[in-house]
Length: 125
Image (cartoon, rainbow, N blue to C red; front, side, top):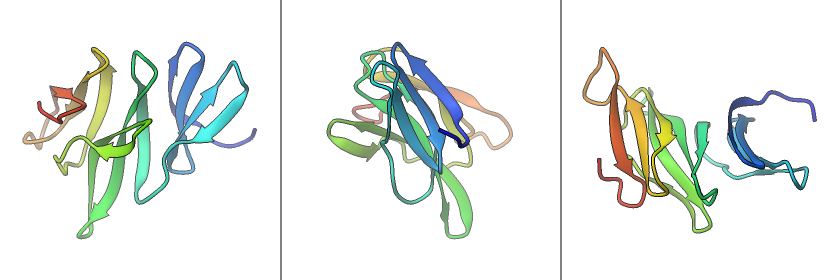
């Protein structure tokens, strides 16, 4: 399949990646790819959870003419927003459990980045 595939994350037989501004998941064992996001903005930097049931990713969109981004989670229940930072830069560094991630962001620090531990179920950091 020709195209551009960016920001891959590999977990056993699954590869999550960005193409066409959305997150896709490729199952190596089945040889199939499926689009898992669709909507406003650009979805990038997917990270597959340790149990392979969820993917956290960054969505970037325009808000009043300004580019902003936040983290979203997609699982069997659908897609939901987990941060409300409305910042220029945020991405998942890694999962530390099935319910917690480390995110790198410029939230509240416009000239540098910091790491936050975020609960993906509650959004608490």
